[in-house]
Amino acid sequence: MSVDQWPVRVFDAGRPRGGGSGFFITPERVMTAAHVVHGMTEPTVQLPARPDLGQMSATVDFVGTWEPSGDGRGDIAVLRLQDPVPVAPARFAAGNALDLPRHLVVLGFPTTADGYARIASVQATTARFLIDGEWVQLQSQDAFGPIVGKGYSGAAVALQSSGEVVGMITAADRADRLGHMLPIARLKHYWPPLIDLLPLGPLPPVDHAELRRALAGAAVDRARVAARQATEAERGPEPEHAALAAAGSAYEVAAYLAEGVYLDGMDPARIRSVLDRFRGSLISPPSDQGQQPPPEDEKVTVSVCVCRSASRQRNLLLSVRLRRGGHQLAELCNEVVSRGRLRTRVQELIPQVITQHVPRGPQVAIEFVLPRGLLSLPVDDWTLGPRSVVRIGWRHPVTVRDLARFQQQVPDWDHDRRWSALCVAGCDEVVHWIGCREAVDASKLAALFARHTERAVLALAAAPEPIATHPALRAAFDSGLPVMLWRREACATHAESHGDDPENCAGSKFRSKMAEQMTALGGLGSLAELPEALRQLRIEAGEAGDDDHHGHGVTLLWDPPGQHPATQPLQMARGE
Image (cartoon, rainbow, N blue to C red; front, side, top):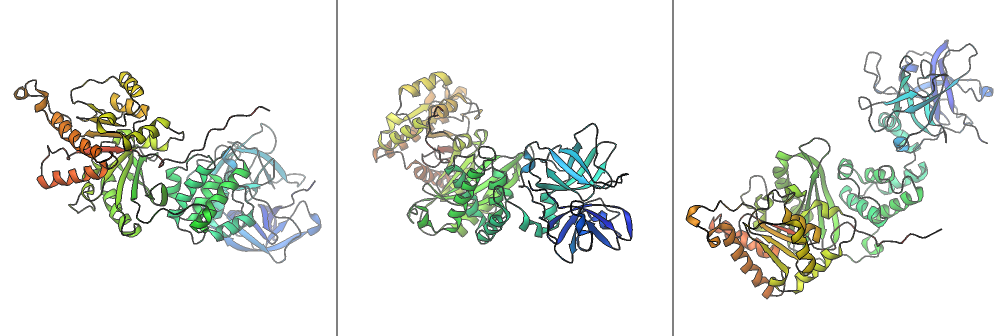
C-alpha cells in the first residue's frame, strides 16, 4: 500500500514556532496560504512523513492578491525548493468532485504538546455556492477530535476515499467549527499554471493538456453545436443554454461536457466517449464524420431560441443557431437579456448573423423557438436592424416553434405522420378551422384529431388567448399537429351594426381569405410552401398599409420533422 507523503509543515527557520501547512504540487513546488508566509525571512518546509529529508529552505515564487489589511481574497502562495524532492506530489480531483456529498480530511500542524500533525475530518456544506464568490464552507464532522483552526492554514483538503485534493484551507473559526477552503477553481484562477496539473473529469492531466492543445484553434460557435451533437449521440441530456452561453472557448465547452453534464452519474467511460465525439467533430474534416455535407443551395435557417433565464424573473436566455436542412452549422450567440431588450437585441443580431455567417445564394428563413406563452410575439413585425423600417417578415419567411416540443427527447410518430399528410393531401383534408366565436373543448377536439389522422394544420380566426393554456392549441400540441396558424388580434366585439351575420366580422373575413390562399397552395401540390406564401401576404399588407389585410398580424407555427434534438430508438431491458 502506497502512503501519500506530500503534506508539509511550512515555518520560518528564524522563528520555528508558528507557521502553517502546505503540500507539494510538483517535486520542487509547495502550495500554501499567502498569510502563512507573510513576513517570513527564511521560509522552510518539512515533511513529517519523511524526517530523513530534514528541513528544506524555500523561496516564495508566487503570492496571490492577498493583503494583510484586505478582505482575505487571493490567499495563495507557491514556494520553490532549490532541488526537487523524491516524493510523489499531491494528486488533484476533478473539478466536479464536490458536487456529491464527500468525506474530506485535512492534515494540519496545530501547536500540540507532542508536536505531531493532526488530521481533521470535515465536509463541504456545498460546492455550488461560494461564500462571496471565493470560498467553500467546511464544517467539522466529528463532535470530538481535531477541529480545523490555527496551524491548518495552507493545508490541502482531500477526499478521504482517494486522497485527491479538492482545495486548500485559508481560514477557520473554531467556535463555529467552520472553515474556509479555496476550491481548485479559485486556486487555478489565481495561479493559472496549476491547470497543467489538473485532470478534466475522467481525463488525467496529460490527456487534459493534450485536449487543450487540440482545441486551441477551434471556434466556440462550432463547439457549442458539437457539444449538443455529442450528448445527443450518447443519449445524454441536452447541455444547458446558460452553461454554453458562459463558455468563451471550445476548451471551456469541453470542460463543461467533462465536469458539468452528468451522463449516468459519473461514468468515466461514457464521459470519455462524449469528449471523443466532441473533439472529433471539431478537428476532423466533415468527410471524416461519415456524413455528407448539406447541398450548398439548400435553405438556411436562422433559429432564434428564447427561454426563461434563472438569473432574474424577467430575464430571458437568447441563443442564435444556424442550420441548413437538418444539419446544424453553428451556434453563434448565447446571452441573457431582459424582457424589455429582447426585441432590440434580436434586431441587432439577425442582420449580423446573415451578413457574416450565411453564404450568398440560398434563401434564408427565420424561426423563433419560444416558450408557449410567448408564441404570439409579433416577431415578423420586428425589423432588420434597430433603426431599419424593413420588417423581418417582408424579407424572410418567419415562423415560430414551441420550445417545449422542440426540446422533447421522445419520438412523436403522430407528428411525423401528419406532416406527411400535409405534403400530399388537399387543403380540405388537412386544415381544421376554428371560428372567432367558436367555443372549444380540448378533449373533444383531441378526439376529433384522433379520428382524422390526416389533419395537420390548426387555423384560428381569432387570437388564442390565453395562449399558454388555450384549449385548441393544447389539443393540437398533444395530438402532434405540426402546423398552426392564427390571427394575433382578437376579433373585435360584434357591434350592433354587424348584427348576427358572422360574415361581417374581421375574423370571418380573415378565415375566408386565408382558406382561399391555402386552397390555392394545395392545388399546386401541397401546403409545404405556406411560410413563403405568408411572406408574400405580409408584403401585400405592408404595401397597402391595411391592418385588416389577411397577411397582417399573423403567426405561423411551423414544426417540420427531423429538426429536433436527436433521439435514439428505445431499447428493451434485459433480464440478468
